[in-house]
Image (cartoon, rainbow, N blue to C red; front, side, top):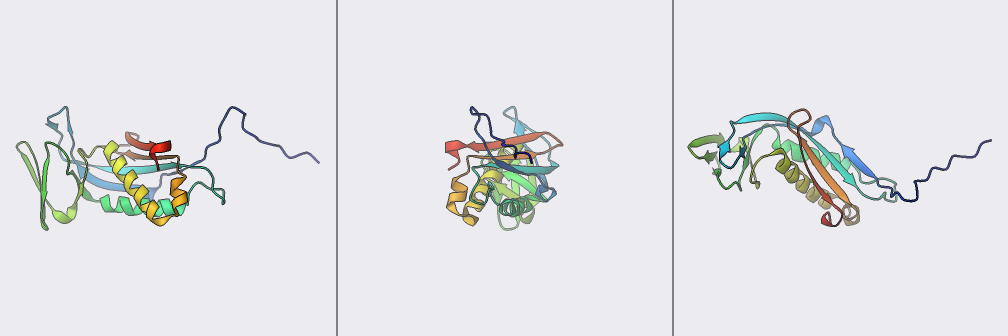
Amino acid sequence: MTEPIKIEPAANLTERYRIRLEKEAHVFAAAHFITFAGNICEPLHGHNYGVAVEIEAPLDENQYVIDFIAVRDELTAITQTLDHRMLLPTSHPLIQVTADEREVTARFGDKRWVFPRTDCVLLPLTNTTSELLARYIGLALRERLAARLPAQVVGSITRFSVEVDENHGQRGIWSLAADAVH
């Protein structure tokens, strides 16, 4: 009978564990426009955005990083709020967004768009870039997980990352690491 193989990491390496979720359920279709180069506004258009999440933490007493189901469900809830909507930034210095119970009006220079209120998501962002959408989704997900899971689970996270793919490999990525996570 042979001895079981002992697998140990090299002495100079640190083990780390993380999970990654990138599922069909975490795709949302939405319209937006962004500004660039200071004063240029691109035309209104849409994407089929894909969202992926990575969470790194030490293994818990059950030998996993975090509950996949909790992350999956909370991320799905967030992406559903964005699906088939017009995404508008409310903190942009040159885009003025005003809303009432029926309509949302967005203005940039001499451009003006009017949308039904129920078709819009007003986001506290300066621009609806994939990078800032990743941050928005990441912060919302952390907040939802903190409300759902024990504090020690969320408190043990050492890295939290969200990717928003807007065009088959064209991604904006946001992450929190180490001391910034808690």
